[in-house]
Image 1 (spheres, one colour):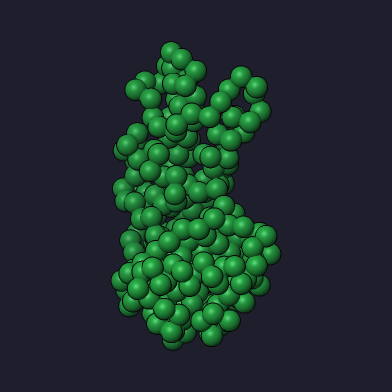
Image 2 (cartoon, helix red, strand yellow):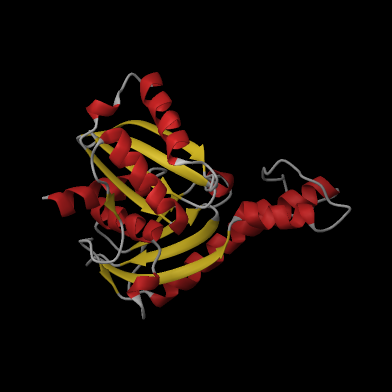
Length: 255
């Protein structure tokens, strides 16, 4: 089995693959202050609760956007699973060509999304990843990573709104019935949920206009569900896109 680990700024995605099948997946909070021993205890508990054990796992792959946690999770994998993980970094085989001005600037999370999107859809693809940040990645049908855009994530923007103005407070982030809010709660829901829906629609429209043909739009990320019911531009949803990308990269680099 393969353990796929995606370490973001706010959460860590864990996926267990048996062949092509994702047989278990978990999310835990990213904590810079936790030691490797603590993450080992958590991972051991997750596996046991799903009726798996460390000896079931023969391979591991990880991406990380928090540099200080790379050695922590290397230690977790080496000590707990007794194997060395494949780490998404400069120099590994990806199967896609990075057409950025400086390819080293592209985050590992965006690379794994691009790899998975190209493998799954074999067409021009725009990946909208709504996580800590909201990112837009564009991949051609030939497998060229063309670039994209980065915006603050929906929760980042919401937290700024809740914590800065003294008279505003946290509200449930669901779409209101109409854009014109007639009370503070509805107005904030409109600005955040419908506002980010419009951000996604507007950015996708601008990217589509710069491409030679219409691209497929794929949504991923933990907050994408907030806007799915409010827009028709999303062609597919793949919540485990980055884990699938890790599986593909592991096979590509271990073959």
